[in-house]
Image 1: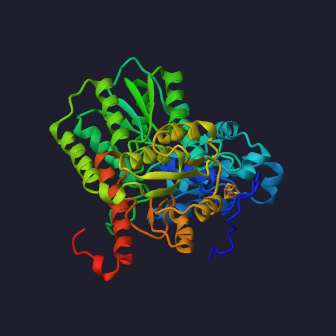
Image 2: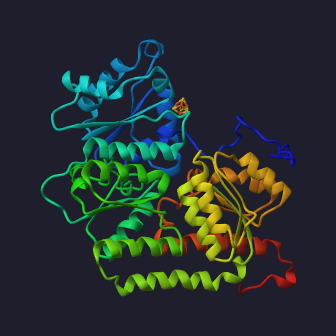
Image 3: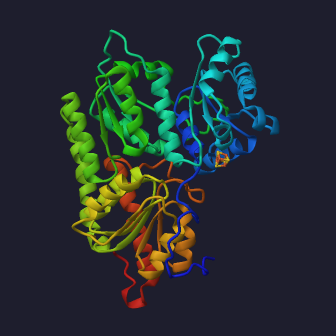
Length: 458
Ligand code: SF4
């Protein structure tokens, strides 16, 4: 299928082929779904909205609800103000959400639509009922990627909603980053295990992984309630998980409401989860229960047990930068060699320097690249092969072409199930992730074993 990919690597300045990223508003839409009672509105053409919705629907296998400003040729010339006001009028009168989260698109950004003014005018015209909210994020897709969209919309929640009062709430804000609903649920379970009162936002658990009840609910029970989002300004601290997805919101909250912020890496793997737990302990003064130590010990046990199959295995990892950083660290801790670490998001030196720092002692000649693509990764693999691919579904074409096993991880995964239900964050998530990696390698070992080494026990 990819037989035509040449081995020789030629420098490219503009062209991207299979870019390991997607459109900004997709991230914004996904973040908006993490507010309870929210209907995201894509401010652009119907085609954009359809793409955003269908991509999320396919990944989560849940119907994703979103509206559109439904641009026509006229909007392209005269701007989308009238469309947005009409859209808000229709949305509130027909679908009755608590809040609408508007994300812009390439077209509306190119026109230069002034969304805050449009929202104010819509409110003044009565299109936004009393007690309802409208927030927005600028998400031009020719800048950044889906993670930028997530970051911008999460920051928008703070800018529009967070407020400081005279009453501290004794809670900790946790911004979980662009992760699966299962990952956010794992973070909430860890907070509950430590008995820490927290506001987790945005929270897509129980929104894009709802149980089958035979009754359709336009607004599922999950999502961060609006009063909690407002209350984030009264919390004692904010812990932002993921530099590229969560830092902007945490910093905005610190500036707006003086809530001290700490930015950590996503709690993927042993060390990153340890740092998350340690920070929670320092911020709140809680004592971790024995059950948490047990969870940690189980992850360590799996890492030790499977060392013989993981040691010095060459891995190519690709995907979102906030996930790749702790993932790389975790793979190194398991004895593996992440020789290629590739993201399509244009996050530059900050990402590359951190990954190289992790790899400096074990894989000093690893190739780490941001704003790259899977075509480049394929070429690297053609020159020096790997034992495992670890990343989203799009790598399956390389896996097939080069006959390399692949473990799916990240966004999007449109051809398998499980990612929205089984976490890869925190200690239990680490066990699940490592099980997937090990089982993929063991499957390959069995497939390739001659009869004399085809063992019953591995
Ligand atoms: S036009 Fe822009 S916003 Fe719309 S789907 Fe394409 S990349 Fe995304």
